[in-house]
Length: 231
Image (cartoon, rainbow, N blue to C red; front, side, top):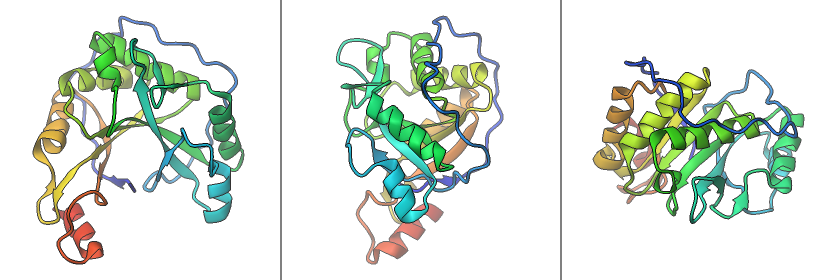
């Protein structure tokens, strides 16, 4: 999906410090370059080895990508790629570093169509926030995305996100949400209500990214995509 910006919401509360510490940076990841355009950051299944981020950048000129997906493993509140690959996997770290050497950067997406979501393996919002912060600190990312495609504990997720933004100022949060129909827009339960809950918890919503590629089109696809985004 290609994110489109929406106005940020001002936090309504100031979350308390996280109860669980996050991991320290590994020191093996290149810091991201400044001043990139985050309006378009295509999803990349980083669990697949090819094509690499650098190859895509060199072929297209695209500088920003969203890496999918960070999940929990089957038994613990430990963030990993696809629920099976270590967060510090040498191939993936190498790809991020190579892209940054070309002037690009990555966002990290949590969620997707399949679990286990971190919020199902973490026991509290504080523990979940610590898991998110581990990803931020390990990979030196400033943009995180939440792809909502299954029923989840939205209250716990947004409480944790607000805590992360308190602990890691400047973290940009995007929500990638399902579209119900071209003339309807974002679905209520896994879309509008997620955003309302986020605002109520003081989350600063940086980007709302409707899944304008994943619904039944109303005739022409191009027209349907535009209608869904406008709706």
